[in-house]
Length: 313
Image 1 (cartoon, rainbow, N blue to C red):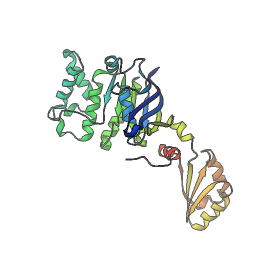
Image 2: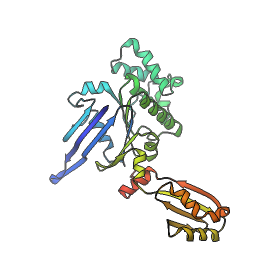
Image 3: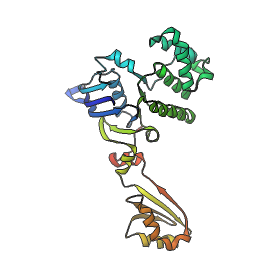
Image 4: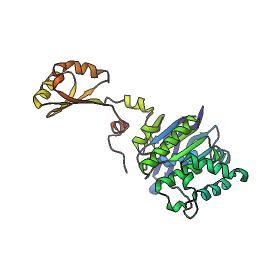
């Protein structure tokens, strides 16, 4: 079931001298229920603009956005009942406790008064903050505030969660806690649409990845399919001495692309299966090999392959 559909989406702004700036250009996105969809790209690539299109804050210049078959601009209230947003800014009340923050938002979201306590307790338990519920939010670390913001979004049990850089600036423990919660939400059948400029986060969480830059699609697919698009399987061999490394290089040079650095040889493979063929070629040097390490391509390799540059900060 498609929960979010974006077709031929454009968002443009007029600049001085009649020039047009495209924040988004010809985007086509389909998001399935019960999956984690990661919109990946450098800062300024159009990720937050896309989030704002989905939740109805921005109107498309051209194209369509659909949330559960509803137009988020024309049917904003119905769409807001289906989804929840965790923006980059946590927007919490520092002088209130965590419990008081969530009670305030339970009231704002229209949760019946008789359900406030149970809804708030459930949200606090989900994000691991029940023991700190009576502490002022101003005393929380950045990671704890991000977790509380996620708990706030979960108050209404939304079908869709929009998370804009959910672990931006948080500590490792809080990041892992948020990641675990995101995985659990997808297992429960909820749709999680997150933006990030972290390759590590996308690889850890996403069922489907969509990479954009300057508002345009660069490439999309599952993490596995994206990594299969580039030939980046390498084996790093370390030999006992430079003479043995030289003999191995001579045996492999006409078969594989390789680089030698003294006692180390890096060999590029077309496929992981080639590893066994490689080792057969140098089995006469088995007693001279100290270590070997197999390296698969990463999403960072994918990005560099298709864009030719590092992610911007």
